[in-house]
Amino acid sequence: MTKPSLIHVCMSAMALIGASATVFAQSIITAADTSSRPTTFLSEAFRFSGELSAYGELNGITGAPRRRNPSTGRIFFRPTLTFLDAVTVSADLLLSTEGNSARQDINQLGLHPTWRWGRAHIGDYSDEISPYTVSGIPLRGGGVIINPGLFRFSALGGQARRAVSGGSESGSYKRYLMGASIGIGDDYASFVDLQFLRVRDDPASLADPNPLLSAYEYDSAGVSQSNPYATTPQENLVAGLRSRVVLFGRAVTWNIEANGSAYTRDMRVDEDTTDSVPRFVRSIFKPRLSSNADFMVATDMNLNVAPVNLRTGYKYIGPGYMSLGVGWMTNDQQELLIAPMVRIPSGNVMISWTRQNDNLLGQKLTTTVRHTTTGMVTMRPVGEWSSTVRVVHLTMTNNAPGDSARFGFRTLILGTNQQYAFGRGSFFRWVNLDYSYSGSLYDVPVRSDTRSTTHTAGVGTSIPLGEDVQLMPAANVSASVDRGTTNWSTVLTAQHRTFESRLSTTGSVMWSFDNQQANSLRVRLSSSLAVSAGLSVSASLTWNRYSSSSVLYPHFIEQTAYLMITQRM
Image (tube, rainbow, N blue to C red; front, side, top):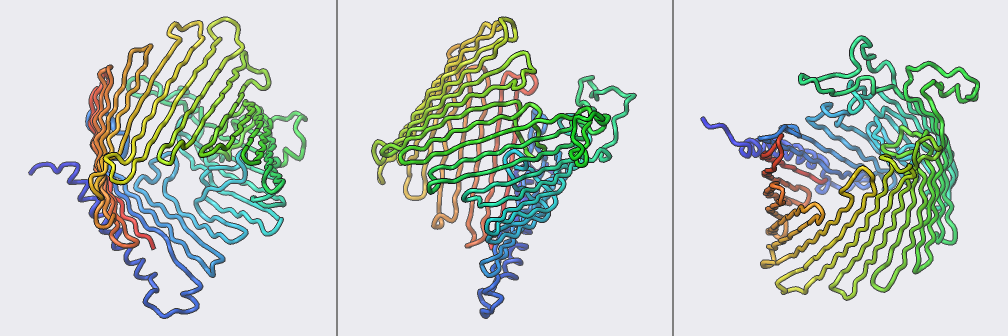
């Protein structure tokens, strides 16, 4: 008996997933359908809607290490119940075969009621208090944000991380977050809030590394894999103020946020017993020898008086400011922004200038200063012609003396995009042309190849073949003048629609290659079918072959197939 190919296995598995999901979805719809029942108060007061999806994927690769799971299955369920057009309760359910195989649990279950002046969360959710306190962090717990009249209040809390053993890249202690804000005003007008954040890891959620062992773990070849001491239990306290002032019918908008933070890098370090920390702070945050405190201020003002819009901003984030409630933030940064925009007939002109620097407290040997100037003109000279011209100039220098630590960098990018749309019946539906020039200069004493010049050009078009089929060929070339490298890529895409556009099929072939003996060929076929008003099925098959002069993986082939069934209610 011959071994079944990956495609046969994919289609068999996805067919099973699809059939199960369809039966499940149809049973829910049948139970919720009230179109054939007598109209009652309950049927008018409650409205049920939502979406149920099942997703299955198989992946195979030869010639290189596996980058993804060989098989993945997910179920999404997002029901919504509306009562008297006043209260809406939605839920998010995600079940995945990946489960806890990732750094954090992928499975999600959350309930989110909303009403005219507020919203709440139970279970898994993500919300925001402000960009520099709580923003973009997945939580498992509960929260409420209300704004009845002038009064404003929000409270968010829950588990932000689970305990994961490992080094600096993968390890984490169990982390809990609690944040709140209280104030007066309205998000769509002026307001002022006092805000607070408390984040704390559980030191007991991970066992301490064995001090008798090396600080690094090694694989069988003796290569360092991770540092088990790099993962530390942390603690964070943030308090501050956030405000917005709206004047002259929203012609002027002024935002400001100012916070102070206390942060402990390692809660296992001895407590700081000096008298430099106020007693009331010690009652909620225990300072240690690995603790530090700092502050941040961010403000911006927007002036909108036709035909001019002017945005200015200033940001100062101290090197010791830290909020563990924000997914990503760069500290030790000062920034000044000026960005005017002028509306012109059939378009607009935008300019922005930014100055950034680090080393705010003079603790480093050098200070890096970055200036960025951007300009863009977008216009429509005639109805069928859209034109964009863009300019970016960047300089970055430091004040180090004339040694190997000194560097200077500047780059100029010029680009344009032109698109012309032809009328119906033309051979081309539209044609798009794009060109960019990039020239850079590195002023580094230890380097000799300090210049870089690159030209990139691309063209694409759409060719209709009747009412239901169109071809979209495109080509792109990028040439580095100084290094003598050239990269080409071509892609041909065909799209077919039938059954009154309920069935859409797209096929594409992309070939890219360069003069350094690297090339790849990618073939993809995807299709989407609207079975009924609420039921849709989509599937895709992708085959990718890559070859290069690489010593490790000179040649590999990867195949991926997926099927997704969605039922809207």
